[in-house]
Each structure stands twice: as C-alpha cells, then as structure tokens.
Image 1 (cartoon, one colour):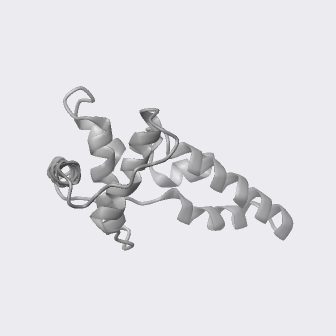
Image 2 (cartoon, helix red, strand yellow):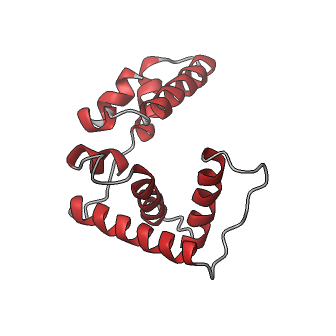
Length: 145
C-alpha cells in the first residue's frame, strides 16, 4: 500500500512518517489482524523518540495528551488519504504463496526443496523493500526469487 500510494503521490506533499503510520494501521485491518490505534501510535512514538536521539529512556505516550490527539488525527487523515488515492482497492497478491508450488516443480529432493524455498522466501521478503511489486506480477517475482 505504501509503494502504491507513493507511486501516485509526492514525497514532498505527504510526510513519509504520517503515511507510514496510516498504512500500517490500514494494513493491519486489511490482513485481518487489526491493532488498536493506540498500539500503532505507541510504536511510532517510540520510533520517533529513538530517531530524534532523545534520552535513553522512552517516555510512554499519554492518551490524554495533546500530542496523542494530534497523532490520532494525523493517522486517520493519512488512512483516509491512502484509501482515497487507491480508490479503496486494497487487495494485493503476495508472491510468497507461489513459492512451494514452483519449488516442487523444480526439485524432487525434499532437502533441496526446503533450502530453495527458504532462499526464495528470503529474497521475496527483501524485495518487499523495493518498488518491484509495482513493476512485476507476483508470479514473476516468485519465479525470479
């Protein structure tokens, strides 16, 4: 979702951190393992504190604070922007589901199959950090892995 959003929108006009929060919150809903908004905000609050180089102790986010209210608004706005930009089409097919079928076609030795499947899985996980998913079909990514 993050890659698809920024394929259409500018990094300059939309803060990456805000969109990341919104996409993570939305993705958890889509993948049917929803997280409460408070949990997402606590994680990002800790990340922001570490990145900003504050004290070694992390300060928890108070749910009654103005900062919490602002972050909550930012996440809901980012979620809305992502949904609107993608036209509410959130389905993505992951290349991981094709690995075992393709590996069984290539090899008959179970030891080699397991090792090959693990290597392909690792490669596909690494490719998720790139924009490869925008350029190629999931089947092609799996074959290349």
